[in-house]
Image (cartoon, rainbow, N blue to C red; front, side, top):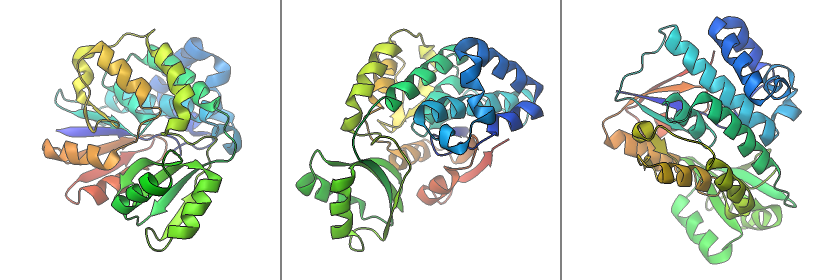
Length: 300
């Protein structure tokens, strides 16, 4: 029993698609297919866009999805990984769409079109002075209490990545206040992330509504959905078209419960993980959450 895991934003790098395209003949087929689905200009971002262009959410999301999914397909085709009927799939934020596609719950064609829309919807949100920041060695329970009591509807824990790292979202003025007041007592260091909006928070409601409308256009193989783990609920998807669409759209504003998701997987008896994406991002988190886990990555 294995778990295939897919990273989200932050795993991209300039020229990543060319490396994959040159290595596998099947990758050429899929990238060429993607050009017909969403346009050559979009697909070429993963080949020649510079770092500044690629980090824009409307560009990074589609580039990461294409790389992750196509690498997965190439690894299966070349017998470097074997997929069995009881294997699980999970992705971090955007990576959840890659997981849905890899599990065959979501077709490649539809997932590519949807990810392009998702990135554009999230990239369209304009908020003055947004911030997301990673907090290292956090006292998670106390930070949650402080947010509820002092920064209600202002600051949010967006990602529960591991016991030693959470990511918060909000506005810079509120975060600066929190940071100056509680650094050293509730966490040892904060690292601002390069983002255009406070993702996975109620600030993204407008994008969620756009995605909620868009997702209605697609169909899913509902019988395969329970092989995929949801970030929002930290358990497998329901085998229901309505539930799948609701989970996908609401994930735009909901918390990425990565810690709880890995603990849920552990409770099911799984301990073998394979990360598939441009860079290895999630393996260290998994090993911290589950010391007995065996995790490795495939990046090309």
